[in-house]
Image 1 (tube, helix red, strand yellow):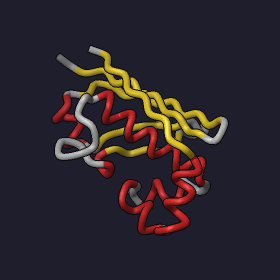
Image 2 (cartoon, one colour):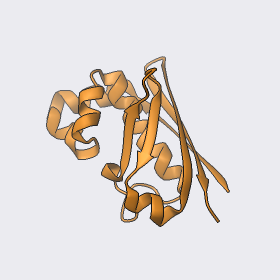
Image 3 (cartoon, one colour):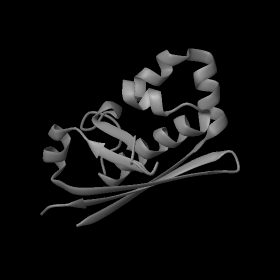
Image 4 (spheres, one colour):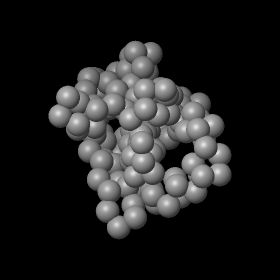
Length: 119
């Protein structure tokens, strides 16, 4: 079974969040390695959208079953976004594979996540 999730977020919204709360805001939804990668408001917005899209693809949203820190965004050697889940969540949701695409335009970041589940 393949599931798809999508999310869009205003880059300005993430810029305001970071200006108001600084790194403390980032630590609420990004781990240390993600904070190193997310150097701009565009990147921060893309990572937020990726995590929200992942939760939507898993049909649970961010909450009790899945937290922001269970979802990990990194980059491939070519700079493409890579999505992963903690081992616990990979097993919990029976995830076979994950795919992520992020784009930025017109003041927005959008992410699309495809997840193949084992059944």
